[in-house]
Image (cartoon, rainbow over all chains, first blue to last red; front, side, top):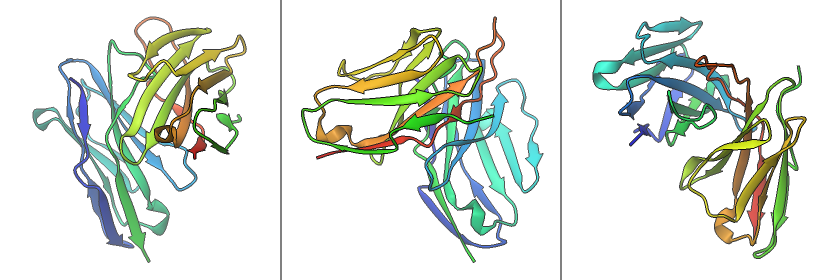
Length: 116
Length: 117
């Protein structure tokens, strides 16, 4: 069965610290997609990144970087030099190739608080 | 381009009533998905519609239903409300590409927060 685990429920850091959000997934499919979404207090989920299972290259986008390791079934997200605006709940999600495109399996989320 | 619009944003109902929530997807998006978000269960998939047809359904009782109109707008309905239905209901839209190519990116609205008393 598919499953996404975000073991960190809440993380609190001081501005400018680096922080890594962990995500571990389970799937029997060889082709799948992994996502990270950010949910600010307004409620909408904001797409951050999508990765397919054949692309293990790490990605960097500004202060954000993602580390995808199939060997450990992990897709971790690092924010470098965190800012107060990064405070939000972050969700990791999984979608399988033959599943519905709109059906993402989400982790329980990690609430990040960045204090000034 | 306008984002996904959900109405109403907040509503309060009592047990036994029914509720209808509306979602207008991004222009050009033909796929609409609905999710329920609660503190206990997190984000759970309800159903997905494409071209007015339900394509996939999550593990929810039959009290939860939905539909999609020809303009891709979607509604979901919950009948005989229970206290446990209190949640944030999120709608997401996406492009749906032909064949095996998928964008994989869902665009979410801000949600409709339902409180059942």
